[in-house]
Image (cartoon, rainbow, N blue to C red; front, side):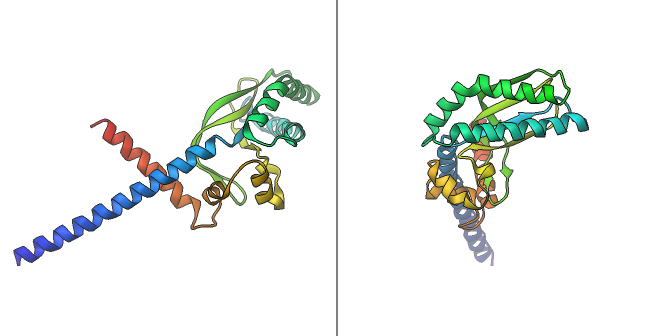
Length: 209
């Protein structure tokens, strides 16, 4: 009887190890795809002066102006590098436009616009999601920048893609693997992103032991 119990225990342990190994392999593969995605996307990050109602409303007005201008600036961008260059050249124009909108609303807040590598959490949007990670971002900071922020994607312009989401993504350089990662086409991005989080957590734990 003891021998049978031992055999069952070993079988259970083996099955558990196989399951963990499969999950880690899946997480590692997804992480590679996630890293590749980060090199193809430019996020937009608009940060309000504070959380009071007026400052949050102002943030959305600035956001709307920024989205219109960036869509115009990036309309002819064929890849990530070209989009980065166009945005870098347009930063003074973007900052001036934001300042004009702030002044038009009767505020005296300062504003800054820059391109920075920024850490983002996992974020769900309408029809797609982006995994957590470090992305290049167009950051627009209003006043003290102490309020709730708003973020989306300016390249490819997925925030304004509406019904032509896939066409917009492909024209911006995203491939089939990128699309399957951020949409629910092959089983759901939430589970994949969770596998990545678990894989990274285990990797950090192993690095400390």
